[in-house]
Image (cartoon, rainbow, N blue to C red):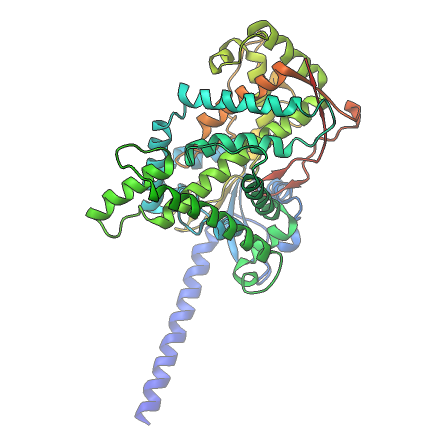
Length: 494
């Protein structure tokens, strides 16, 4: 009897604790921003369009305001809309909003390691190391500019070989841009016909396409359940393993020929630091796993961001031939045809710069931003966000904020030009995000965009199989990232 009484008391104590915790959690979460009422398990799934998640969330924001709560399955997410709201969170309360949130597809890829999606001390150490090392290898300096110019030369030669035929520019741009980041990561470039590079780019495209697809959005919502079942995510896991194997092979090659006194690339620098740190701290963050994932994330981001923007930019120029003509005129006037464009030329080319800015704004590569989470209990605009609350900073809502960009869905370079035709900056122009987790490759991306675009337009004009009025520039997907509509164009030599 005594044993039964003790067991009953223990059960009652556990139940009481669970009830108290449930009540406490309900009170805690009630202090979150308002939002639509979720259903058990599926959350607000029925109110969302997984093929156009960005606009679905913006529509909910019209009812609940610039700060609201959404439930993606069992995940609670606070959504931030508009420049002022995003700036108050990511800049004014930068430390509190500096954590990385969940994104199931990329969590499979990075798994809280490396420089991109890790958190805490690991994220700080990996980010500091990446920034300093990339600078050592010329990022933002003349050294990397020469590499970009060299790669642009290879691209021009390849495009001349198309002889003006209509081609899909996707792989040309992906190969070119990936070679720049490859030279930093691996110390070498790939030939455009290299089977290994082509396989690598295909795997990256498979992962990216899944992450923005309706199925990918559903997987992101119900990751904790779907990861245990067969489905299209299995194909993604295969691609992820392929990418990891590629990086591991590169690391092993570097290990065999490593000279601690003469690092050749990012991998060498990390291996040297890893050797130094392990002598002092066996639990150092400079581990093989963090090396592989850091290289993978930098290579992935460094390849996708610029190639996507150029890809979208070419489509916009086909749609607006008058804009292309003005860029040609500025290139002829400032650079001419007898030398390669240089990054410093941009200071004399406000219209071309405005076209690049407007392309980034209009394209809005990551309209929902990279998910964040608060690093501690946080008060924001009168609401209470418990530590670990996920946050979507809607960068697309900033880049389309009509207070800063009149008629934001119109492609118009004059959004970035003043009355005198000079370049006009805007606080709301944040394609690389803001705050403590802004894109660390911003400087490299700006240089690549200018040099690749001007070099291509110095040598070619664009031709489309469609009339401008028949060209659609709406993206095929509006999730965390976008997919450019498929199109072809001809590169006509000048």
